[in-house]
Length: 275
Image (cartoon, rainbow, N blue to C red; front, side, top):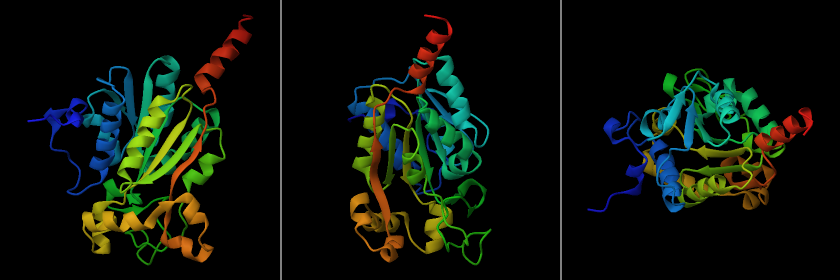
C-alpha cells in the first residue's frame, strides 16, 4: 500500500480529527501538506506554527507534526512576530479563522503587513464564529441570518484582501476550498519566497455546521456551488457592480519580493551600532 504524503506531516496518534463531518479544514491541511511534499520538505523541524482560538486554530495544534504555539484568541500574529524576531531562521506560519485574525486580531494583522513581517498567515474564512455556535463575524455576508443577526446581517463584510493589497505586504491571495490546485500552488509560492516578508492567504471555506447546513446543503453541494461562484479577479471586475454580489473574486492579488522586516531591522541595528 502506498503511504499518502500527508501522513508524513500529521500526528497520526490524534486521528480522527475533532472537526465536524465534512469540514473543509481537511482540504486546507491536505493542500499544505502536498505543497511541503512537492517542495521536497521532508520534515518540519525548521517550522513553527502559531494559532489562536477557533476551529481552524486546531489545525496546527494538535494535528501537524511540528512545534506549535496555541495562543490567546486574536494574538497569534503578535506571538508569531516574537518567535520570528527571536529566531529568524525559523519559518513561522500562522493558521487561524476570520474571527481570530480579522476581528480581535485585526490590528495585529494590519501592522504585521505594514512592517512586511516575515510570516505566512493563512486565514480560513468560514464566515461565522464556528466554535461558539455560528454568531456573526467581520466576514459574515450582508443579509446572512445567524444567532446574533436573526433577521439578516445588517453589516457588510470586511474584504481583507483589498485592505492588505494597500499595505507593505509581499504576497496577498484568496482562494476558495474548491480551488484546490491553486491553493496548493499558493502555499508553494509563499514557502519559496527569497526575501520572505509578509505573505497572506485567505481561504474561503464556509462553516459546514452553521452556514452550509443552515442553507439546506451538503458539503459536496456547497463545493460544487463554489466552483461557479469563485471566479478569477479579472473576470469579476468585468462584471457590472450589481452582478458582483453573486460571486467571490479569487487569485493572487499581489506578489512582490521586497526585503522582509527581519532584514530591514538588521540593517537598522548595524546603523545604530555604528557598523
